[in-house]
Length: 494
Image (tube, rainbow, N blue to C red; front, side, top):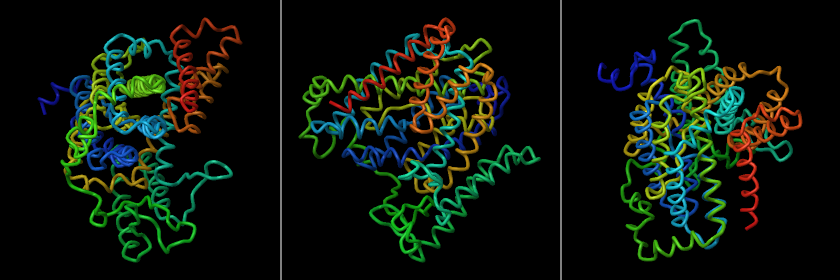
């Protein structure tokens, strides 16, 4: 214990080993969904599924340990959602001449540029130049985004042809479990017992996972949930749910696709697959030429680098505010060490065979439970490492109905804690908050929400003859976001 106190400065930050470990475990439970989801997305462009899964777990372990040990931040990093989909469906599959290997080479080039930017003062300048009101709005946007992710992953909120989104049917047992979990968690968070309040999220997660396993196992035996092409869907249950994938946790014994460890799969994706059976058909030189001679590559590079830059910055802002890592003057403490983690991840993700690394907003789950040091990040990192070998044991916690309680509760907490500090009497600030929040939810992108909010903020201030209040940094960031939106549209035309 004394060793951990010295390494992570637990007493200085008013925390304990128990608090940090529990927070790390809950953070892991809230974000381990990235493993199967990232695997599914990257495998769509031809990558080996088990190899991507194991490499994603390994990379998450490496970069999160760096963040915990070097920066002593309670932030966990992994392959970024949105960035992986952009790589696969827009860049690679949107270009007939490209394979997944060209995509990974492009990521490597982006990683090198991102690393160079990170060791210069650019990123720190961006964070410290953002006014307090904007920081509160960004943090609130992260909260509402986390909440929406939880509702979507649990199937509580679904797509609708008429209204875009709608409340799902309560005939779905997964929806019922997700809603019950959210309500129970919210109730426990306001219980009179402090111990119960502090353990509300892990207690709910474990409870819902166990209940969900009982329900799904009974339905599998009854034939109302079946494994169809690798996915567990409702069959012969309710006509409206026929063929719909369940959000209930599934006992690993029923899913033969869940493997303990597959090191042969890792060789299929490591170093662009040079150790794979079809490696004789791959030429690194010709693939590099293909990447650099395609004009689409340069637009894609800018988009990938900039989105990753601000996604991580936004998370540092939110976590820094709640942990005291950002002081009263708005300066980020120990920042340069913090950027080493995601910069290193961006540098090695391509060669390792997984998508771009970013700091996860779900780190706020641990922060809300009292995490103040890198010990929580290291705890979550070790859990991800274990997933390489004993993932079947942890797989039940990846179900949407299980993670919904944590994501929604924490998202609401982050939103309320930050939105109350926004200066609503200033109408321009209030409108900026509204635009940021609504675009974050409706575009399912924190970066899009922040970008639209900052652009609107600059426009309103200019028209109100308050342009001097904005500052050069905000103008530059807003302009870069505008350029990013334009280039993304151009990319779709090429």
